[in-house]
Length: 172
View 1 (cartoon, helix red, strand yellow):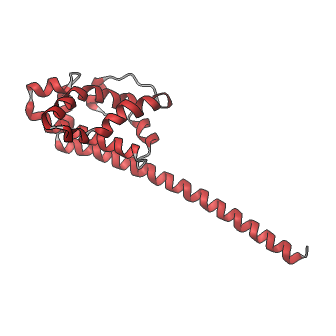
View 2: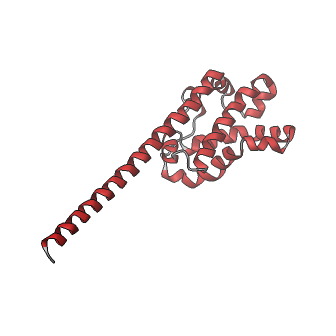
View 3: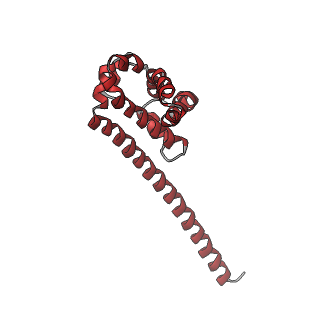
């Protein structure tokens, strides 16, 4: 091999190293952007609940089931349904791999989502009976998140004893 061939191979190797480094850097940057978008989106969803008065209503619910609460306070139905829509959007984002599940489950543990599903389940069954099967589309991803995804990943994320009193003041 002459020295031009050796120089050509060295340049090709350096170009390959630069390309691989760029790809790794880009992949890490895309992952970080997805994580930041996830945090921004999900916290924004919970902020909207504040603006609509839904979080205040949820505080009033306390540890009772949503169905029991709305039976005595039907005016609260729409505010509480806003929670269902938020949980459904989060579930859809995880299901479709648009949102970073690691970020979500490290902030809001699987037990928190499961606990909220337990509170809402009987209410959602009644809503489906009242409004028809079309109503179930409003919570299909919430159901998937709480009943399938959360039990699958529960061991990977921090253990947390579910305490409704702490949730009333801070959803984290």
